[in-house]
Image 1 (cartoon, rainbow, N blue to C red):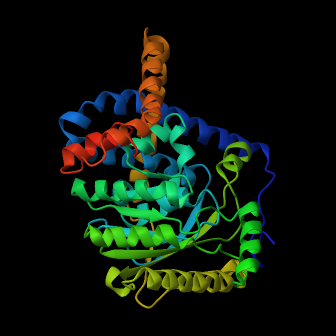
Image 2: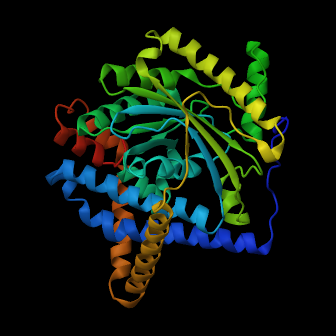
Image 3: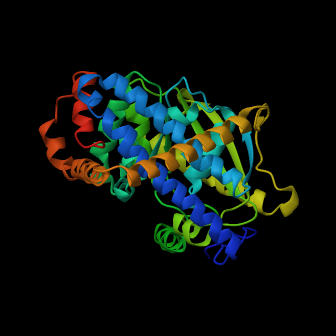
Length: 397
């Protein structure tokens, strides 16, 4: 069974108005990310070699500023409503955030959650994503320069990449909060079928609302961050959808479909509360996911009009502050204006086609050089400059 009992239906059809909204959203994302990469990120590339610390701080802030556009449009044109409870994520302390992965849009809506807690978190958050996404023109380039962690879903391939990226984060001197989906993939029909077969073979409990977590990546990240002295907190994030399940970015683009009622609950734990051994961490994560399954079961068995994720004593409820929605809409307006301006500039002035080809050559070529650069700079992580140069030869190790 793909859908757990009580879960809302999977959206497969929408009307013309929704499709128009989806088209507007996708055009805004495509052109703002592509033109922003060409006219903002590319001219800053010399800083990678001249002032790597300036580069990192500038890119973190510029991309964080852009992230307000997709999250803001979710609320502005799709009327998405969020209920956010639990503990506030501290942007000043390095941390690992783990979340159940119900759909491929969880990370998008999580930006709305973080904005309610503290807009600075859009600057300090880093996300683990599917490796293929780094090739998306514009958005993939920006995520690569912003040091997001692209994974191949193979621990053998990803182990070295995870280790190097964590070393890079630590050497920047900045505190990042890294979002990891321990399940490794979203709970789509194929993944659910694989999980059912896996649970039968291993004689594990059959879950209905989550997938069994993959523990190797989680253990590696916790232990490496401990080794680097780069983790103070772990945040357990639970996401639930009350009215609709929209499984992927394709459904958002083609159908203009989004859920309208999304619930997040965040629980903060001191890293010292977690077991020290690898085996203990495996058991801890599996037990946490078992509890998460039961929390979601309780959520979906409540009457739809009164559903709430259960939370803990002393938890907060995070809503838009008095001026935060105004700021959010203002930033959306700024991005809309500069995107229209860039589009006119690209169309009206000569030689922009050459600049576009140059941008594609730099970004795509950098990804093609990933393996060669990784070999060339292996072992040269003695300081921030060499780390940045090694890393940014390919924008992602």
